[in-house]
Image 1 (cartoon, rainbow, N blue to C red):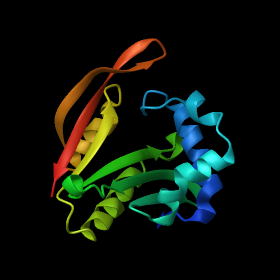
Image 2: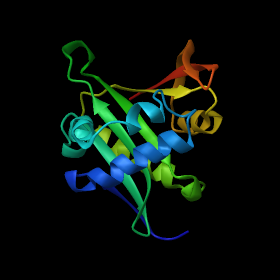
Image 3: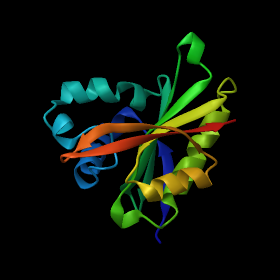
Length: 172
């Protein structure tokens, strides 16, 4: 299996995170609510602004899984600061590289993410959106205690096909 570790992303990980996000969008177009072509055209200033909160732990945490020093996966969580929603955190950018799947990396990423949530006692609910073709991801989330809260029908148009987005949540 190799040696993998989970670490919190820092500004020094900028290029690696940007590259993995672009790779994820390109290789798995059904997995995300945005398209590769929407992100690949952006310059580094846009990317620095986009990734700032993720890489500086400013109202979010972004975790990386490294397998033998190669970036194998990522997951982020955004802590809502809005007064009426400050009890909610949202999972974003969960992705494990195809060659690193089935090694337990995704579960380890989520375990670390849930440990981070424990450091925020005001968080009472974790939410995420998953596209309906992502059956394996949906099962992973269910095994982690998430439940389906609703479906946004025909929410995305991916390669000419309508795709539903499933809203999942976990109460703490």
